[in-house]
Amino acid sequence: MAVLINGKRSQRLQAAPKPVTWSVGSAQPRRTVIGNVGIAWYDSSVETANHSEPLILIHGFCSMSYTWHEVFDQLAARRRVIAVDLKGFGASDKPPDGNYLIDTQAAIVTGLMDALKLSRAALAGNSLGGAVALQIARNSPQRVSELVLANPAVSPADQFPLLARLILLSGRRSGERLPARIIGHLVRIPGLIESRIRHAHYRAATVTPERVAAYSAMLSEPECQRAIAATLRTFDLRQIAGNLSSVHHRTLIIQGAYDRIIRPESGAALSRAMPRAELMMLPCGHAPQEEMPAEFARIVNEFLESVSAERSVHENSLAVR
Image 1 (cartoon, rainbow, N blue to C red):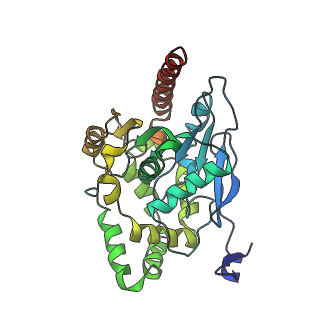
Image 2: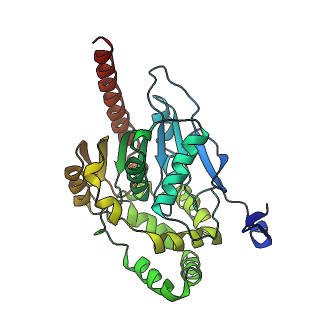
C-alpha cells in the first residue's frame, strides 16, 4: 500500500513488506488512523458487569503489544482491555518524519481514546510506555483514572546502554540515516536480538523461541530501525521527572528487583515522589508481564479492583448527602 508523505506517494514504502502481526491474548490487530498515522491496537471488546474503567496497555521501547500476550486475557476477564502499538513499532505505521517524541506517543494514545469514544481509562505502561502513561496523566489528568507503571523509564539518570549512546553519537551530524543503518547491521548479527532479550529478562526460561521470533520480525524491518533511531535522538525524560509531584492519580509501581535496564532503586524513588503511589517489587527483570504473567495480572487486577471499590464507596457517600 502506498503511503502519502508530504502529499506524494512513496513507492519505496509501497514495496516494503507488510509488518508481521501477532495475536495479543485472544485479540487480533485492528487499525485506526490517528493524526495521519495508521495505528494498530487490540481490544478485548468485553464490557464487564462491574463497570470498571477500561485498561489501556502501552508497551516499551523496541517492543510492541505482543509483550502483553500472556496477561491480556487474564486482565480482560475483569474489564475491557486495549493494547496499542505505538507509532513506529509493532504493526503500526513507521513514517520517516522523525517525530517520535514522548508527547507524540502520548497523543497517539489519547487520539485512540477519542476514536473509541473513551473519556477516561486506566493506563498501564512498561518502560517507555510508563513514561508515555505519565505524560498523559500530566497533560490530560481528566483522561486517566489510575496508573500502573511497570519498570517505568522516568529518571534521566537511567541512561541508555553504551551501545545506544554510541549510536546516538554517530547520528549527531548525519541525522537518522547512519544510526538506522548501524541498527540494521546489528540486528542481522546472529543471536544478538536473543542476547538483548536475555539481558532484559532475569528468568532465562521466559526467553522462548516464539518471543525471539516475534521481536526479531519487528526489529528486522528497516522502517522500525529508522523509528528506533528517531526515538533515541528525541528521548528526553527531564520534563516528566521534574513534575512527578503533580500526578495525583492512584498509582501502582511494579519494579523488577533484578532489572538491568531500569535501576531497581528508581522504582522506590518514584514511589516517594508521587503523592498517591505504592510500590511492588517482583523477583524479575525488565518485563514482569513477560517473566511473571500470572503474578503480574493478579497484582494489577487486585489494585484496579480495590481502587474501583474505593471510588464506588466515595461516590455513594456523596449521593446520600
